[in-house]
Image (tube, rainbow, N blue to C red; front, side, top):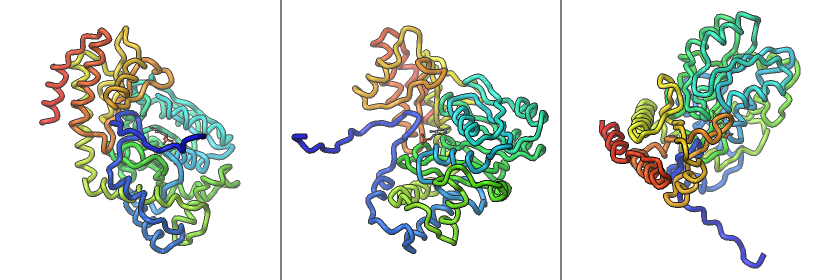
Length: 391
Ligand SMILES: *Cc1c(COP(=O)(O)O)cnc(C)c1O
């Protein structure tokens, strides 16, 4: 190599399915002095993170920690620890991430029963109920905010069914936590995990996890330890609780970022934050429709934090996404799984959920669509969205 590479990432407007933009104070937290992972000062920072995670999850759960790794690490920790051979799990699949949970569940040797719904709708309660009646299950798993489809899954009815049938409920909150209401205790959720880079607006790299006393007992009652050593929740808990038993070297700087990001969520206030995401998401969605585009997800179950919008006939997905990035510095997601090439996934998560981003995106997208022959009504889109934002 003749020249030493320099590191100079451009500034983007992150409006995809994650990562979202992070506040400068969160990024700056990662530059603070390193501490040892058993330093009393670092332990204090972990304890504060734990306390703030409980507040953001709205839970009193003792066992609340962050697994080292992205959202998938929390998913894998939950699935690998809650299931073992001989267990039956009912998994709801109405998008890409439900399918990922099912793949993990199958690897535990558990018997996996899949309940599906079209990609664009939530899992119907009755479908879960039918499977619970068909035979006992240890676990029901559903995705609260399905980032592949833009659908919000109603939780409380399914939770009540789980209680009635003696099953634990696992909820994927990767895209919902910090963006839409999540009420772990009030809803009776037994296990939940999230990620740092969606609505919590920190870099990817940690996964908040919380377990109810019932879920924790089930893990402790296992006959054989989990097949995952790194994500063994018993070992992780022994580091996060007062035993402070070395298990891995905590990602120190990531923990600082999580600390600052959680503090920002609490400073804003959860209700205010939910309201902000709701307002901006609905303004964007109204703007899309005024522009002449069609939203993909069922109208009654649309998430404000992630919108799937159909790619119009005659428009090539990558032409538009490429130009958005090159000309306007905007990142949005393409469709995945069966929605590949059919929708765009537009995120308004955390720091990226701003009125300015809504208007900037509608104007940029409208302009590009017109250049490619789709008569987007940019004026109507901006007018409708601005009215919603102003309300
Ligand atoms: C992003 C996401 C994940 C996986 O998180 P990673 O940080 O990519 O590992 C899991 N579930 C849902 C619903 C997600 O949106």
